[in-house]
Amino acid sequence: MIGYAMLGTNDVEASSKFYDRLFAVIGVKRLMEFRTGPAYGVALDQPMLAICTPDDGAQAFAGNGTMIALTVPDKQDVDRLHAMALKLGGKEVIAPGYIDPENPENRVFYGARFLDLDGNKLSVFCRSPG
Image (cartoon, rainbow, N blue to C red; front, side, top):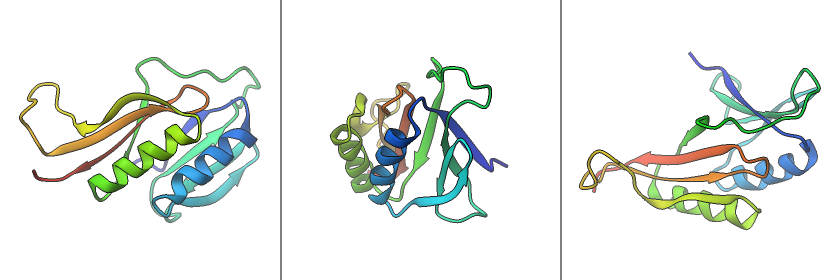
């Protein structure tokens, strides 16, 4: 159902460098170039994430309560993406670990959350037993 999600940026060049390096960790690359910025993914027939300036030319800003969640195969990918995001200037929201606010004993949902250079919140997670 979802073709792509879009995050706003005020600096396409800096954001593109951030996401080029971040997504290289898991083999994701630029698949499309919109006039306002790139879209990343693994294939054109799979969901993508676009990083673009707003169409209306106004200032981009992160939405409070808005988050894009990226799924990866395993805990090592969660850890590597989180570490790379921080290395590239992102800010930590939640360190890697098992995330289940309703049941801390649940060891199925492993993830981390961070902000990109524009303050957009991303979650990276995997579903893995114990």
